[in-house]
Length: 293
Image 1 (cartoon, helix red, strand yellow):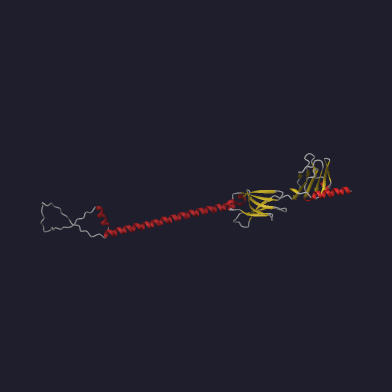
Image 2 (image 1 turned 180 degrees about the vertical axis):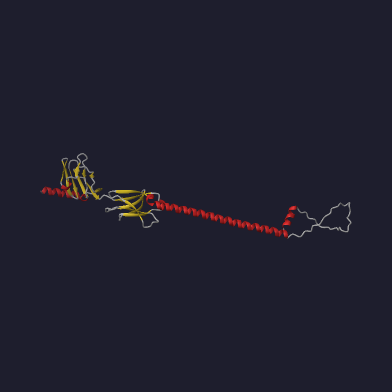
């Protein structure tokens, strides 16, 4: 009895000096292997309590509740714990025959339910999708992702809302539920959920393009009209100016001219008089202009 007390006292001292070197996360019902070999002699403790001992290459379980879930492989020399439950969490220390202590810290989590998606009806003009997990266990985060990019995330609630940007209406997104032990995802084709918004957006774009074309055509028509008005006014001004210039010239007197040679001598007739005047030659085109005025 005294030897047993000394053994457990030494065991507590050894366990208290061990340093945590590996963290293990597992789901309820899962299995773990403590990868520290124990060849011929060694012990395994849970929270400082002896649960198994290896002596002369054989294992003896010291804790009854580990009878059907703790195994020792005599080839790999590793301990394996199966059908993990919440009360199996905590520290596990392995002390082998070399007096080398290896510590494992085990964390046990409930399995995650699969995430779901539904459309929010808060604003029918926008497409907002809700990523949620029913019955989410503690430490669950819900995330909207596009590839590797996090678009929205909630670490304190079991749901997160995302208003889909216009440029992502034809994209594929991921609704993800995450815990320290596992991730579960749901792929979402945005067009499946936001097809109406995408159609409305295309119609709006078409209307905007049509309106822009009408504005451009109207502006061009106005510019052409202004140019025509200015050109007409310039033409009228030039024509008026030409007419004023021509009417300002001195009056011309036309007389019948009889040309005779010097040999004929002067013509003596009571009906004929001699008039000396400067003669200016004009072309037929000049006469036509005068007639128009």
